[in-house]
Length: 612
Image 1 (spheres, one colour):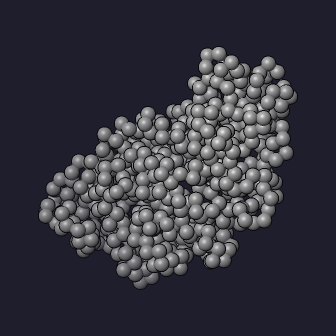
Image 2: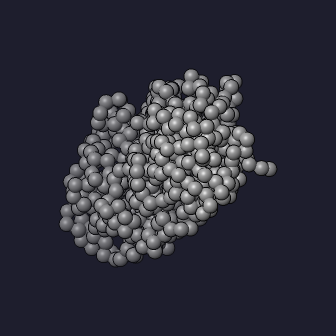
Image 3: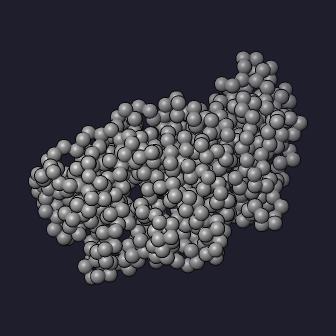
């Protein structure tokens, strides 16, 4: 996958008896077929599998959270196939070098197993390598949907893969190809938009991440998620019920996955949600028959975090849930902490004949094929040359361009925009004006994200100050206090604060919070024209406030490069963004989507420009 130290002869061996850990390792012969990179991958896979015990095969199907590894020796002892860092699982210190050191340390443990099978390590790098302090953080997917630019998405995939690979990581749990149909959903911002064509066209991010060959130094395994229908749940409830016909499921939610499979996506993650009462993690028809059969998917089907536990609605997994999920087509099971018990349960179910050995073999063939394709057997360690590119200027410039293209100009009364850089008095206010954490949103150096200086970047206020000329005054007050009629314009940067799945659901109101309302009231009382920059992961209920605003730009969740917002505010970039979702006039309209006959505040695809 990347230039790594070649796996030397002398791989360590031991005896992995069924139900028992590996014994003391010993040296293997250097000329085994699976160790020979000149042989076809399927020959290598078959040779390796012929040498594996049942427990070694079961171990390959486990993906444990790195914090769930009590003793690193357990990786070799139990032949663990994969590790992950969850959204809030970062090493200390949270630096690219520490990530790479951590990865290489875990990999050395895996190589000490009897057959020397390397780990594959996964992270949720959903808008850049967002868990790493100082990495380039791109706009969330909803902003990319506004760009309508497949080539840009592909370039973002390339840069994301390079930064991910620079920390040793092999596997990215992205992109999310969900089609959001109700903006109450807390994962709305992870969707490219409300129609399948957007997700399908922007799935070019997959080819960017995976490159021409998975074995290329800066390529990582991409994941199409969450299969399938999670954007269509009733009332936008996360992990909820998608109660629609199969025809609608296929027409709206399945198409982006079909496209991703055609592009060669290496893995597919299953949704927590249910389709007409059946949890996707146990839905054999949609996984075995549709995904693996009809769509011809040959890669790894991976569960979501503790996804097996949720099949029966009760905490923890049962033997019945384990059997149902494996027989439904799950290949790699994300069991963060209870992975030893999961192996024991799976072994018991196999020995009882409830899970066929052929199903275990199918899963292992898929997993091992990707490991060979990634080049992990030849190059198992981090390419430190890539580590130095994380957060680099060229990467940030691409993110800035993505921010520019994602901005949607929704109102421009009296041509208040673009703002004049010279001889101007500008008053900036709002909780999101000078807060890198707020503008990056969830899944940024932590699962739910956080307000404040969570990482390195340029806030929107900093971008404004860096854009104006010396003759312009830029005043700032977070809550709007201090404004008077001497200012030419007020820029209110307001909207949402960080959240992710579950906590981000808005089953009740979808309006502005009290802090925003109070800030706006102060600005509006001054009589100065107000331009609102809305930082949010979805449309908010603003119809009653809009008449008071001279201008409105939807900035989405732009990530670390707030300069891109300033580029649009001051006309260095003529806005080209188009709404990827329909903007409600009232929250009572949710769900509202193009073609449903409702009258929106702004229709799907709407977006103004400053000039032709």
